[in-house]
Each structure stands twice: as structure tokens, then as C-alpha cells.
Length: 318
Image (cartoon, rainbow, N blue to C red; front, top):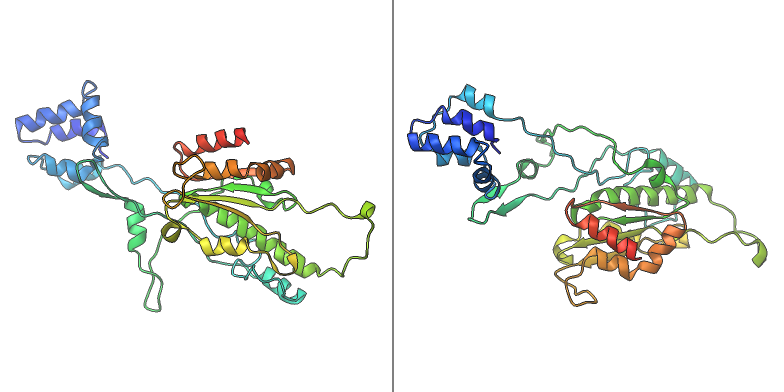
């Protein structure tokens, strides 16, 4: 979006006196309210400004000097890290031999998966708007034998502490509505793959009969995922993966994921309104408290608006 100083520069290039004065007013300190109404309420960009002020004739070199660089977009990686066992392994099957498990653990995946929502909406006056990066990614052709799309990327460390994510002795409570579920998928798949590989490679003999006094401590509570979206049939991102993780595994080598979903347009909360992840957190309060008491960590990702505050309030209520 054009900044206020850009309107001052554009006013020098307008040939119509009325348009010149309007551009100066929008770019002035006194016209900040007008600037917000004109730019932010309608999400106007450079194309709309140049179209609205017909007398503007901006040379290409001046336009390039005024245009700011596009800011890079950051998306959470949805696939497990490359140093975890091969994420293509079928984690729902634990009947592999020790040799197969070791071979699979040595495999490193070069696949990097993202979860990107294409931004498309209409302003209050009916202007159609599209996200620059998400729309471009959606337009990229999938790789085929005839060619592929080149997408420049960089990878930076995530915000979740690696030690917490890698600690298999304690559960994680993942709360990720919408595309915020992307890093949760990466974490939960990596943890499940590590557990399957470790259990299969160890291949321990049947334990001897033990008295109650010498029985080993019970396993930690399961990992938990609270996911929310509008419609289960349309918006359940990575639903097949999470449902597999939530299925009791063969020989009980892997503790099933405790999956809690809130579909706001399909379900009604206990209080009669729409159902969100915060409702599911409160409903599973005893299990959440048990996970935290076992040394578990809470991981939250998604909207930076009201959702984190509501989740925090729900956790305090638990």
C-alpha cells in the first residue's frame, strides 16, 4: 500500500489541480484520517491509486523508486524435520522388523510441505482483493516431467523450543486452528515417527511377570491436538494424518494422539453458540491438566488476533 509520503510525491506529477490538492491532503499529517479511510478501509494498492487519479502520469523510473520492496512471507513448515525418521513411513503400522526400521530411520526426506491459505476477499465496497504471495503460489504449476516452478525460499528456526518438542518423556498439547495446524503436524509426525522407529528397532523381549511393587511407571499421557475450522468436510487440514495418529496402534507401540476438533459451522457448543477450540480445551480440562502435570508443554499457533488471548483464558480456567 502507498505510504503518506508517496502521495506527496505523486502530487508533483498530477496535472489536474483538484487531484493535486487531494493527493497533498491525503499525504499530509492533518489528513491522516482521510488516508486511513482511503487506503486501509478499502485496502487500496498502487494500481487503485493510479486508476483513481486520472491525471497522474508517472514515469517508470519514478514509479520504481516509489514502490517499496515486497516483504518476504513466512509460512510454517508442515512436514517433519529431515533429522527425524522418514516421514513417508506408514506410522499406523508397527509390524516392521528391526532391520526395516533401521533402514527407514536412515532415510532422510527432502520433501518440504507448507500449508498456505489463498487470500481472496471483497472489501466493503465490493472490490476483489487477492493475496500477492498466496495467489502466486497457487498459480505455480506442480512439477512434472515437462518442467517445474522455481520458488525461492529460505528456512529459519521456528519459535518452539526444540528441547520441548524432542522430549518424548513428556506430552505436548498442540493448539492450532486453521493453518496454525501446520507446525503441529510437523511436530506430531516427527514424534510419532521417532517412537515407532525406536520401538521397532529395540524389539524388546516380552517382559517377565512383575509384582505390583516392581511394575514400571505408566507411560506419559498422550500428545494432544486441538484443531478448529469451519467445516469438517471442507477445512479439516491434514485430517487423514491426524486421524491415523489418533487410531490405536498395532501392538500398542505408539500412544494414540488425543484429537479434539471444533468445527464452528457444523457443531454447537455446550452454551449454544458456535464451537471453537477454546470450548474443546475446557471440555478436555482434566486431560489437559494431566498432561501439564506430567511435565507437558502447550504449543499454540495460528491467528495473531483474539485467538491466543482466548486460548490463554481457557487454559487459566483449566
